[in-house]
Image 1 (cartoon, helix red, strand yellow):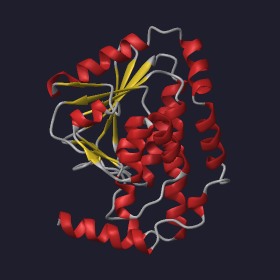
Image 2: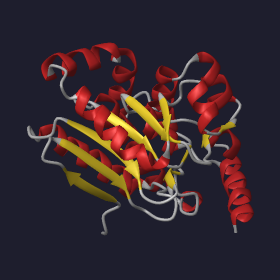
Image 3: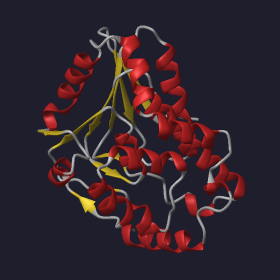
Image 4: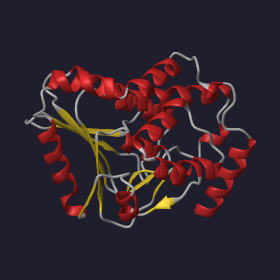
Length: 253
């Protein structure tokens, strides 16, 4: 299987992880599992002090690959739910500083991925930032909803999660979905600089305080990762989702 990620380990201890699944860095179970395993490895690597996650091309990530999702059988749906919880749970609990360098569109699971980061920096380019799940008939697995609920203000959650609004870079910054907006050529440099600054924090204190700060959502995600308290394992991606995703795919053809 070809890797969907590129990893660059800098001599200053910053790992740069690039989503590389053109054209929109869409995710499937395999790529989600790969990302979780990669960050587990980076956690164990004592030379890695912090990480930056970004995307190749014009998108950070457009979320799940809708071309493959409607045809999943029961086992495939369960694997996908497990992979979503594992990936988002691993990144949200990652005990080192994590910066998202959002280079382009961040949609659905792609925006959740960015929300897992401790800092979120967006390029000042035409892009869509959206949690489109409600518009395509998809209900949220535990990890995705808990990250969104924890990281978004009530107003932002209402507009993005419940109503499925689409924001541009400036609008997302105004709602604190992203922490800062920078010119595109400066994005990666700024993200690395922020990661380096955050890496100067005492690592043991950081690794202790982060899970304490996020204890309630991380506890729910941990239970969901055991296969318990995850309602999406019973019924997910039903006919409503299949019809809505088919409409989206016809519109993009």
